[in-house]
Amino acid sequence: MLVVHSIKEVKDAVSAWRKEGLTVGLVPTMGYLHEGHASLVKKSSDENDRVVVSVFVNPIQFGPNEDYDKYPRDIESDSKLVEAAGGNLIFNPLNEEMYAPDFSSFVDTAGVTEGLCGAKRPGHFRGVCTVVTKLFNIVCPDRAYFGEKDAQQLAVIKRIVRDLNIPVEIRPCPIIREQDGLAKSSRNTYLNDRERKAALVLSRSLNKAHNAIEKGERNSDKLKAVITEEILNEPLAKIDYVEISDSLSLKPVDSIKKSVLVAIAVYIGKTRLIDNFTFEIK
Image 1 (cartoon, rainbow, N blue to C red):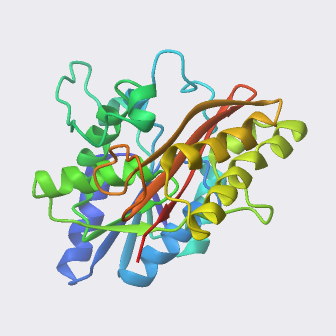
Image 2 (tube, rainbow, N blue to C red):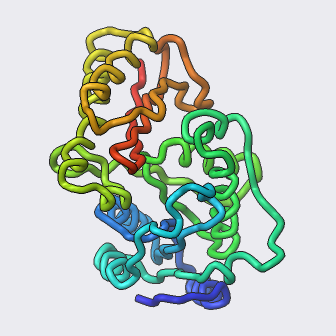
């Protein structure tokens, strides 16, 4: 497996693969990889001849008061995980390789970015759309793999691919959880022991809402109340949002009539965590 740092090296590798008639999968990441990322790499390896994994903490998707500087980085550990999961090349560029000093071109989309994390993190999805579009142009993959834990990001990427006619198939991958239910996240490393235990309130509150839906509850306000009540019982938790939205448009819904995304963002201490589930009325 190769670890490269320049766009030219990636393009040269992909060009050689293409000459052999090989298919290419892309797994975009910000590094500090865990089993959730490994599942994306494994799926890409199963479905493609070669797999490129980008490891790049993208500065333009972080707000001024967010955790860019302290975001965890460990390329040595990442390399071992990617190789074990079936990856063939890691693209680990410096900021200046991705963004020229006078960089001034951005990709953005409306609608699906307006609620949820988009409402709480202005400019975040413009940064995501821009870097992912750049990665698509650099790698030119057949397929790209994204986790369903970042449900809004997944919807945003699907939208720009559709709207801009980008020739790549987007492959969603399910949330990977710890044995106790906590969704895998690089930010889980920020939690101390007490906060780690408190963080279980996210999956616990969503499970209660899921059970209520299965028992027939369809009113969004009542379901959000179920989630909110559970979270507020945890002293270390502070709600950022609790939303029930249409799965495709991500617009809030008053009642569940078809496929919906139930999504939450919660601060555990100073660490912001997200989780969600999708429920489809059949």
